[in-house]
Length: 393
Ligand code: ADP
Image (cartoon, helix red, strand yellow):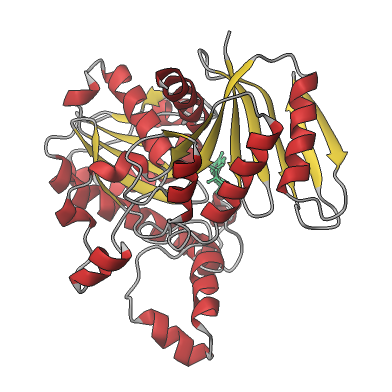
């Protein structure tokens, strides 16, 4: 049995898991949170038992990782590698990489593209290398799966020097999830992935939809940042780009304040004025709240339009795939989206739609094209890559 330590380091948190690489089951999961604050702590769960530990006041990544090392050390595990989730790999990383000094330098060179995500990821990598010095460390990039997107799909219609000199183009995110569910979907369809065309919708707090042709990512709704594309929990998705300056002028905001509004106060939360949580909105909509009803309608309409446009991109489609917290659990959202696509031959089987929830995969289609619900497991992709890449070295 081989275990991998999977780490996802944010600016004030470190999510961790010990995962069996053969089964994809995590025997230990946890999060160090509120790092840099007075109430920094680690919460973790093993064998159904939840525990919590206080960290020193204002604990940093290094202190959190030394506590995580102790927790993992007391756990019955056999870690052979550490896999790190890194949000942005720019154009340098088309696949996962064994971390050495040159990889760390290359991650540094992407800081301007993901200023909130990549600096803490690198800090986490350096702390984890100190905590687990004898294990190989592998970086797995959220953007890597989409490095196969053709140039005509990733270029923005901007002066070309913005791309050539500053790397401004569409990158796409959620790559590990789209990779995982597309492979699972091909397995469910009993088709080689290299011959499978899919449209995958990852709907969680962040949402993205990917066009996958012959197993490769050929388009994705997220762009230079994870703000573009679908309506999300608190992010607006697509928007008239002039609105950035219109909102700044109207509200007398700085560009950073506009960014915060678009990233944290918009999406389902902004539209409903109530919540970013799909479950809460479904309950409110059911009870007759019109703002909640409209927020969900805008969400579904945007997604249905993307699916329609991606049918142009994929060619003959083998399946639509739903995943992520909303995609895996919300029969309502899936049915609403598919009802908007009815004239394209899609339909939903009510019983199958209700059955495919809470971790249960299934084909919910009543039409001729399958519609698959596939629970995602991004950590498993990271764990498998960590073993594969470290064994190649
Ligand atoms: P993250 O992107 O943070 O990983 P998740 O993938 O866990 O988020 O998705 C969170 C979203 O999933 C929330 O909007 C939540 O309301 C939604 N969700 C979870 N369970 C259900 C459910 N049973 N019905 C509808 N939405 C659900």
